[in-house]
Length: 219
Image 1 (spheres, one colour):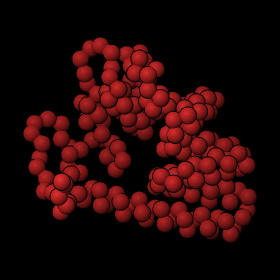
Image 2 (cartoon, helix red, strand yellow):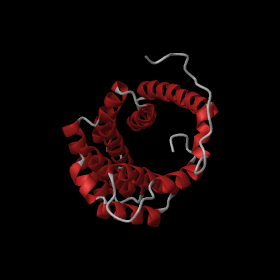
Image 3 (tube, rainbow, N blue to C red):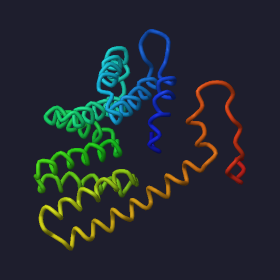
């Protein structure tokens, strides 16, 4: 999913989240939430809704007992609503994600919620609230760091400056966005060039042996 190989992500995550009938465990809930994000990005609305309904039914005991997964599930619901243009629902789930994220210091989820709210406000041309949310997101992302959030945030801040007619700020954020874009491309090329990248094609049978990429010895 991180390298945008969505056609390969679906079968691997489908396979990973299969389990015998009965209540789901935390790992399968996490896998299902990732698969739901894949469905959202591919526009598979029906498949996403079916999967999430199943997770919120057979995995409800897991969500009730785990702050991290509950916050993650809330963000998935928010992102689904955002992509379907159900903005009030999206904002409700995003605020819940921030609340849960702040309680457990789930910084990456909080940053994701902030940047999505920033995008919503900017779509409504509310540059004041939009900049607050985007600035909060990039502040957290710079500490992690999270290049995906940084890339999204710089694009939005460039948009804020454009709406305000601030050419100096727009030029600044354009340069920052260009820098992060180049870093993302570099990391993408490096990742797909690694021999381990072939694992995304594996579904069954013996795993392929890979040469060690580390010369260090663990004691």
